[in-house]
Image 1 (cartoon, helix red, strand yellow):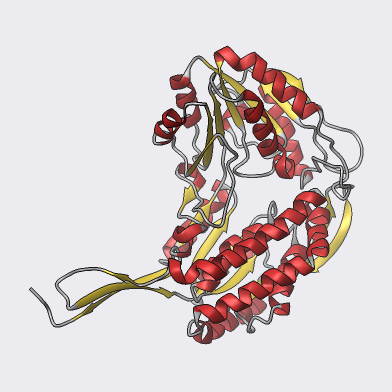
Image 2 (cartoon, helix red, strand yellow):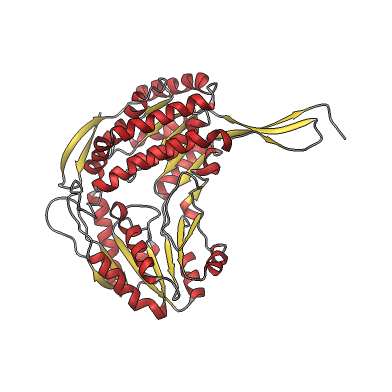
Length: 458
């Protein structure tokens, strides 16, 4: 069996890659379990040395790896290079900090000595989407490997060359066989991998619909899972905000990766007194962006990754306009080759409209007018999702207080919502559970083992 990849820039066949059958899957998973027996006994220093090597391998091969993303899923080349570097940074961050994150904790009790130590649990299966192929792979793998686990990566079928490039980077860095492996499966074979006795935990990034299937499968077999699912992130812009800075950041957040990001700014909720001036700022900035070939250095916005994704985005735009929203820019399906969609700004959106209620995955920004801060907060939480949120105001103490009432896994005040290997990332509600990155992420897939040493005291 092979999987065919279509180049989203021109709609033409790019290449084909083989997929594994159940027998090959069995071999990979058994190899991972065998490798775990030795890998778990390596020191933090040994693991860190290998992770630093893989980071250097990727930096040395940046241009080739970046072009894999650009060709397979349409990421503009400048962004693709940045993603390779960010993945390398993640590897280095955990190489530098994992031992401290997992340091033994001494806890007073009735024992002579009592403590908690963090031990690996085995093979972790990462099920990943196409929109940030290298970053998401390292976000899952770097902490798991540094904790002493082995990893198998089931990447999205639309980025097989990226998946192969990631696995090759680990091989070039000298990782022992079986410690990190690529597992290109058909969708119908994923459940068998989750259920397999060699897999001890699952990390999933993707839609809430697929996440619920993965989570239920893992739960039936009593395996822990971390889910990073969809988002409909609100950005609250209050009247006293630095509007120019807010507009710059909102536009950047909305168009990174052609808007195909779970934590992109999607619902822009603006206080009424500055609503129209802020719309003007957004429109001016969106109008300056260049849509085109993602291989070109000057391109700001590349294509949508797939035809069906573009069709769904256009449906959301049309239905929202039909419901009464104003289209200030974009909104029309382009003619020609590839899956391009123009940057689109819809104003006067309310909570009854499709673009407010559904996750939008593409260069579509929706602006909502709020009477005041209280209504803005109510609108921000009026969603099934809870991944990220942003607040823009000159009153920072007020924003810090507001953050406690926002139903989201991360809140950025006067800045962009982003993932950072130093800080935990994850969501609530339909955006998932568990955390990745930071000291919290590495503790998702470990055995927090309590040790009580007698004799009893007191």
